[in-house]
Image (cartoon, rainbow, N blue to C red; front, side, top):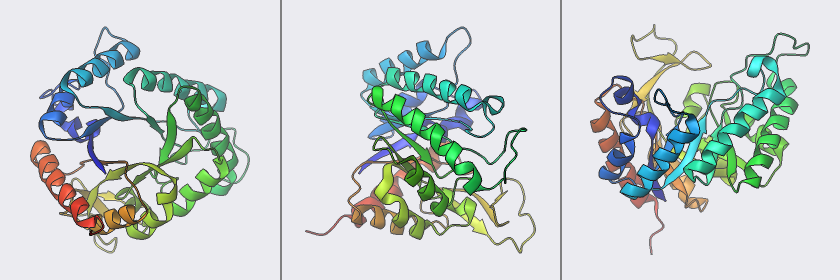
Length: 295
């Protein structure tokens, strides 16, 4: 597996002004990552998104680290004021940006479960599935024309547990469409990470390594930094290997399924950013080495 890092991991430093987004590329290389992925590009004032994407690609080429994936938000139910075709067109424009970045993969959201105002049917996942699958199929067909595989991630609560995500990828039924499997995000939907990873690896184009601290929902809110799962349990970001996600077990499952792609850190912890990323990478590389079949 290639060990990567998402630009999202450095977002606290970028938001605080301690680092420019383009500087994340050299930092990732300096920290020893094999690849980097970009999540929601923050365009500097006076530049267009395509212009800045070209600058990011040039910087990645300069320092010698490939950009493996480009991640954007999307909402195939309520996005673009509930106009599905407009939302598809907006996401297709982001695939054009992915082509400038030179990435092999493009991840977009599916939906957070907010229905358009004119929706008249049941507000259930099953009722929304045909519309979401239509959108994903149109997007991946465009991606295929650019040589870019497209995927959704288990993300956003509504489309986050493994059973729902598997239903979506089955409904889309396109060879260019797959999944970004995030081992930690299953926690947010109260799904067992090891079972979910085992279920979804046949569809995986890209994977995230993520860890969370967990507390039961029977406890009161633990305080700042803690979020609630779909079932009311508490979670907050952790350094890879320090939390409750069975990271090593998930990696063993990935290896047993023959996965040889990118495993990219998304750090969401409250610790110092660079320390958290560095310790996470150290643990992740150790876990990956332990998971390889013995000769």
